[in-house]
Image 1 (cartoon, chains in turn red, brown):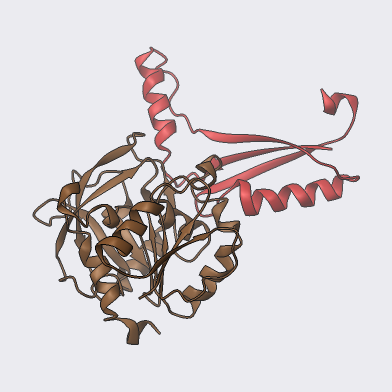
Image 2 (cartoon, chains in turn red, cyan):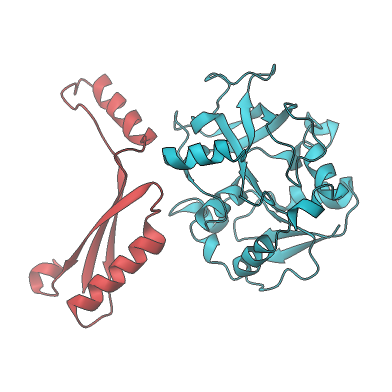
Length: 87
Length: 234
């Protein structure tokens, strides 16, 4: 079973890296990029049998380790263990 | 006063802290490895600076799960003095002994320089011998010292007089230019509700001998060694 976790700073929290990147894009002429928020992306391989267990485990590690709930929120996707899912 | 300096893999200011309390202040001092479960006869606990566990995920994020942190949490809960310096402050935030979190410095640069901070409150074990409003010249060395907490938490910190140190000009004025990292309200250090746990980004342990450019950090150690706040903090 695989899972993907996207961790981003909450919208209310200033993102110094995102700001630096959007400034760089503007200086490169990409002025139509109006904002950038940088985040983290995790791919998890899970040794569990069911999608429910995968959901539970992914939520637990995301809440307790991968994201800091004071400043970050996360979104997760559990991928079915099919050929397409293994990619 | 017996000091314990907790050592995480990646701590790199543990020896600075040890040197300050052991050799400069002549106090019994021990290192305690993060896998240990007891603080023994500690009177004061220092969580030192560095890059615990490499800080790869987030600063302090993994250190909070170290076995010794259970003992540190109990020690803090008993009202005994704990100070987190730089990465030690970040660990205190991650483990919830202090509120808030650190963001990258607003200019995304690592700042290694002397700054000036103002002592806002003297009723903590680490500021009892300082004067209210005293300006200290101390070094900082961090990339993630941009203190953030939600507005209601900031309000509570201010109303409960828990902002212990603020970045200021050498004349003691709170200005944006004096803020090296973008911290909310120029916050350089805070304490918990019971005031016995203090975290700060600057390094007082690197400012205890003239040879390193400043002795202004001495007052934090003199304060806790004097035991001036012991009655209040227990």
